[in-house]
Length: 422
Ligand code: PLP
Image 1: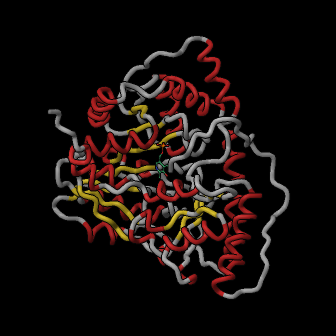
Image 2: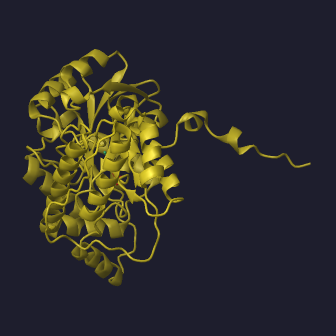
Image 3: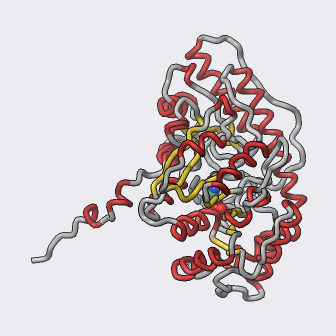
């Protein structure tokens, strides 16, 4: 007699109890409906600039198809160190203080697994990116949410941090510009938070993947603040600013002992980031600035379009200053964020992500990614306007075209259906 395996019972309870991403749920619905405009995807609609793809093609032609050092190519680490120095005046030794990862996603997982012992608490501002709490939990840690609010521009305050600290608090996760709110954080607030991190011996894991997508004011890199370089793990990557989501290239920068501990996990689980992605990242850093600037200018233009559209529709929205998300309040429609997203999809074929996918504090909001063409944004907000009008009984017919788009990088992809992630 053969025993039948019940696979559900085989799953580690920690994994079993983690809910799947609230974003995914909605993407699965979309595949079943035709003619949907998606404001759901958290990735640039641009194709990676041609010179980056070309550098990668050349490298394949030349036979660069092997493993690299576990740490990643030294040339790339040197270029990253130069970039951080030039932008933020912080120095990292490329030989032992930088690790190339398969995106910020891997960097985050490595940082959590390297830092956390069972029960260690991780402070996570909420609303927040969907991966933080699951990564902390999978590493044995305990997520503790710091509830930021629209009144504060979704900025974390020193007070929120201070009040949440217990003897088990080990890590503070920072993530500005923020997904899903588009909030940035003032230098003043960051300095106050840094003081607490120093005084209370917290390790800061700072996900700065949207640093270059800052439209108002200047981004402050956490490691550049007094006393913070030595207690910060800086995570960044190429997915957003260089339109390179599918390549899977990122990095972690920090204390050399810690980076070498992270490298042990990376070495046994990933070995190294893909060489093609590393070569592409190197080209992006060396020659990608002008294409990147064009894409950022385009996002900024769309940001203004979306804000104008939301104003006209009458949905209150705090002004996003970074990333490519708007986070309007939808409670006036008399629906929960889940109901709003589901009904908008059903009635108007527009996909937005319910705010509660980013934690309880996101309830009453939806995330609209403006990483879509102006034509799609115009049509999407016309449809959202009709949806709201039906609910609020407004009469105005809305159009939001704001002139001719600037010259932008190539936008078409052909052939493969590749699905999407965050
Ligand atoms: N961090 C944030 C805040 C994100 O929004 C995302 C993707 O949406 C990631 C990290 C994942 O980045 P990567 O593609 O480098 O793994």
